[in-house]
Image (cartoon, rainbow, N blue to C red; front, side, top):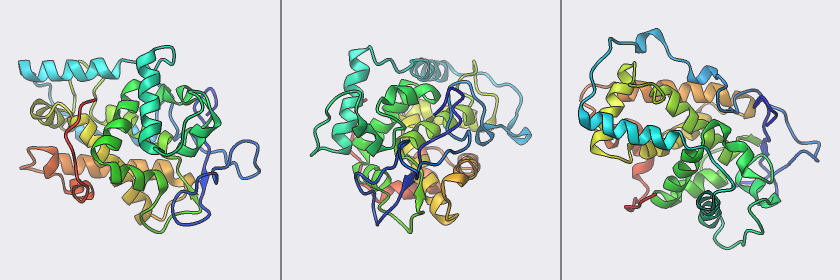
Length: 274
């Protein structure tokens, strides 16, 4: 990614599943420069733009909603900082969950490219999502390990020759959800955001769970659209629209009731803490 967040490294698929060592980087003629779909903090993205139909008059938060929203916003405000040992350990934990049989040689290493980071230092990719985007990836890996590895290794479906990088795509999903749910506002200004707060008050991990649903939904949309790297932003827009439609369905009282949750329900879930 350049200083404006305007490029990414595509992953070329050689055979079924993500073949370790078949990730091409800047020294190869197979590197492809993409669009600004890959986000930096503060950059806009067409996949994250609201629509007039989403707006609604202001509403009052209950004390429980205020408390839950504030805790989530506190998480969102934490930038990834490679000088903080807790952040380094969290990143190392992600590696262990992704590649348990391979030792990581350093917090800065060419090995990270195997997971879909753009360079040897993942900290440079966190601008769009902050530390919470790492927490989201860890939640997916710990609670839905089979889904995590299917997404990482591209093991489901008829895949594109040029695939989206797993880790950077995950950061984009975090960013998209923050924008869709209007979580950086004092209180949500949309029906979708208000509805999500009701989910959050009954499940403090609602944002993390929605992230897992969104990642699987994005991958399903990617496959159904037979997309390649240039269509990533189109896939993200489609994913957001589908999530918004499902969240606003009458009678939905928890995230597990969303139709797209079925994409995860085939995977076992274990209780965990971040």
